Image (cartoon, rainbow, N blue to C red; front, side, top):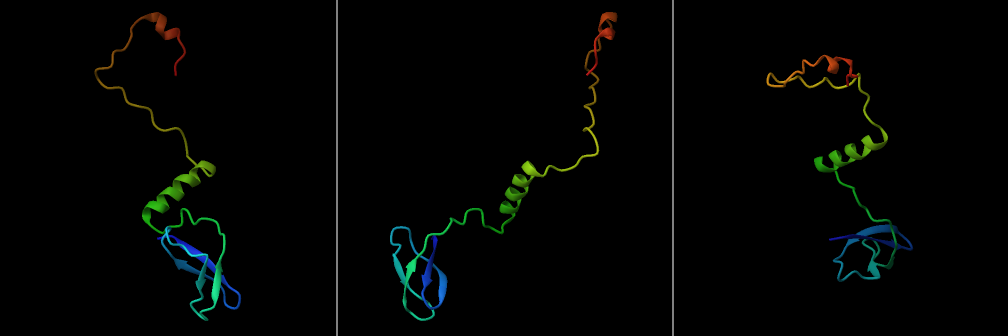
Length: 96
């Protein structure tokens, strides 16, 4: 269920859970039982403490703060079945 924020004139803001189909425009304050108006707030997207949320946050952080590396990754080793050209003209070509 979504959490909605209400504001009591004497006690201040408080949160209450209601179904999306039956969200009231006003709710009783849990402290003084006075009617309180619902306020507009930003959605609380991405506010989790799970391991999945931590991974998503770390992944998003790498877009602006990439990790520092010491050098290029090691090259791929050639498998024994990779053919090697013996054409002398190939020696003059630039190497990657």
